[in-house]
Amino acid sequence: MESSICAGALLRTKITSVQIGIHAEERILITGKGQLGTALACALEKRGLANVRTIGRVEMDITDLFSVKKVIRECRPTVIYHTAALTKVDYCERNPEEAMLVNATGTEHVTLGAREVGARIIYFSTDYVFPGKDDGEYSEDEIPEPINAYGRSKLAGEFYALEYENSLVIRTAQVFAPGGRNFLAAIREKLDTELAIKVVNDEFATPTYAPFLAEAVLNLLNSAARRIYHLRGTDILTYYDWAQLYLERLGIPKDRLIPVKAQDYLRDAPRPRRAILSLERYLSLGLAPLPPLTIAISDYIERCK
Image (tube, rainbow, N blue to C red; front, side, top):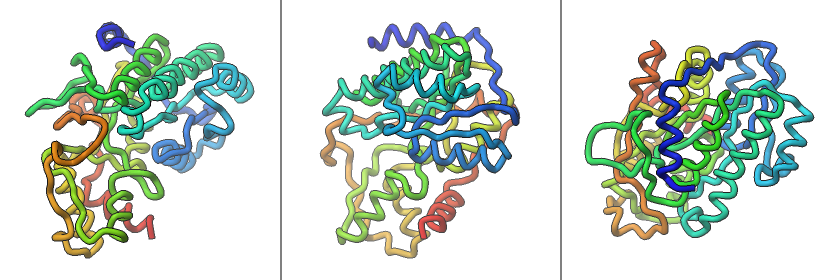
């Protein structure tokens, strides 16, 4: 899928409106049992929605259209939260065809299944669809230009989702949650095995805590009037600063962290140095931003005990 084709599809959505609310009688299907899928299921349960099914790869292989349609026909959801994805950025760089199969073709399959039963679909994308810039933020209307295989595959997924008139795309960034595979979990693991931990200090993140993100997503769905929204944590900081905050909350000396330049940190996939998603469209709806990162980290640590 060429970036230019995807970008054209995204630009066409600017004049299209969509209304996706939350109703007690909804039949909800969540693809993926990862950090966001789990957080969404918990948030929906808190709101009293009983008919929620979270489904993993064993139950439904999104790369298999027959499998997808079979499951969707059986449970006939009215709303599908499509969180299932291949998110290992370096793995995607080494296996771009698999990344496209899961993140692009898989999304096409879920969208085709949604269309067949008339379900609405909410697709979750990433800040990595943008190449990064030295200052400012990316609005939803700016043309994406990903610099790695993961970003290209997620952008292609956006294209397939937006081809369906009853869809919503939510871009987010650096999601983390207890029990998940994420930046803080990697730091925690290294604390047990390494005396000094190298952390990149010239790439920026907007850490987004999945439980807070899930609540914000549900609030957004009652007000959404556009096809694409950016939704992320409000703190903008380097990965090194993020790791320092984490160690501070753990009561571990921060001098165990060693700041390094991205160019000196060997990775397969290039990352945007600074790809900050603008929250202007989301905030214009009168919705509250996510709580600060310090609160998110404290809650994360408490839940990980």
